[in-house]
Image (cartoon, rainbow, N blue to C red):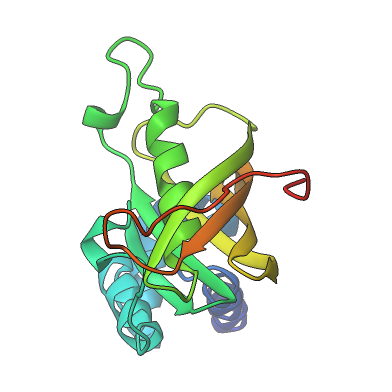
Length: 202
């Protein structure tokens, strides 16, 4: 009987990580109603590495394509999935330096910067700029929460692209933004003129 419950719990653990490979042991513990130690033992029994190694593994598998619009280190957070011109995913572990001292809430500029850099990274062009951003901060983010941002290119027309970015923490949406980004033909001085926003930008 106990073995049956254990197998069922481990199956649920696998399903949780299949949906979201970036879940921490603490989050899994809360969802499964067991101790963190039990989650770790189950992971070991199933051959599932710890979160940091899972993130590296996902990133290695996903980043067969190279970024064109920026260097990998210029992305705010860790880029873990990329399909140029279509979608991208990044992960940001928040720390005390990103938050206010008294409230321990993460400053909004870090949440925005992760989303904005991802919206630029997903575009398949050598030079890209943000022209317009319509954003909503859904709820405060506490220092220590892990932010997972997902970017999807909704449409592209000539040099302009509309990118939707959603950011979650503990599987709850904390940020949503629609970015109009423009791909530039040439990065040389004097050759970067492009109208970033016009009447079609909505």
